Length: 199
Length: 201
Image (cartoon, rainbow over all chains, first blue to last red; front, side, top):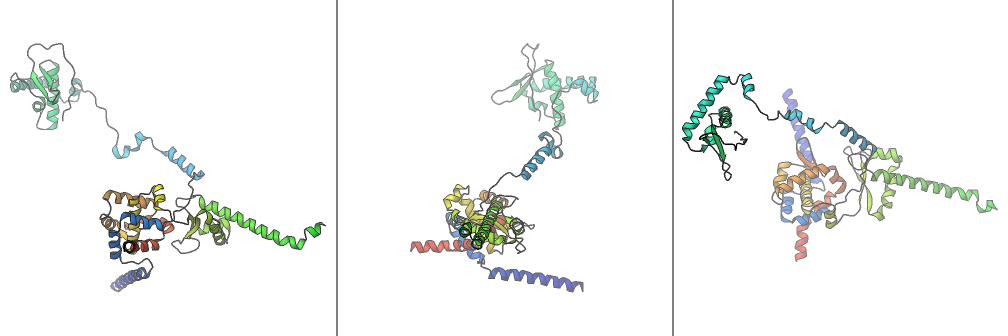
């Protein structure tokens, strides 16, 4: 019985579609789609536009601000969330501003102990002396670790080595390549702060 | 003396006629104001609203208005509603004569945009009133650049010339029904090639 009613429903749908098809074919708007497609491809854009313009009767109407429209605009403006708050749901906060982190803070976060820090500083300085052998080497190659965390840590340690005057940095203005070398003798007076992005 | 100048029997009929004429004028003016000012999102006024504003003889008043607007090149046009009843019929004011191509361009329509719309309306009508966007784009791609097709279709959907149903099929929009004589458009497109051929001969 259920199968019969389903079959009947499908038959009704087919008859309905056939009815629509016959009505459309009998209507004044019926033109063979293939013929029409061919015609449209053959005629120029200007001819198409001209055909359109000839049977076009644009609506004449005045747009004006109504009291209802004004009220809607007022409600919209009143309920508009400030720009800084608007996309918080999708993108969250704008995040913490970049800042400085000192050795004391690292110690308090248990990332370093004082002894461990000194040991690591001496180790990286020794590695620099060995690898540079009195010459300049590429800074980025030198600080490159096996993962981004290690690279950041080596960059952090080498910043202390440079600050203590045990190494120096030089930037090639043409290639923007940064070189590091061990410092010979005492550091001079011409020291300056350099910010390097570690990737 | 006064009686002979204004006999009561002769004076009544002209006064009644004048009153009727004044009432008709007032209602015609009212009809024009109702039609010319946009009140909702879509232009035009439905039959039931017209009856409320003008009374049950609103169709006669609109006929008078349409005649009065002839010198201005406007007419009252009716678009049958989906239910096919008088109440759902939408009345609106539109240009009696078609604009020239130059006038259309001045109004901000590029020839390419009009050509896309003309081809789309003709194709949709030939495909029983609906076509998938993909099929439409693929057809128009042979004649227009891709970016213009996307831009134009979206623009015409927004303006009511085209419509998209819940199955993502493109259909003819209410504005096309109101502004464009679709039957003439199809005939003109089909005649374009033959006209040129005849002119060439």
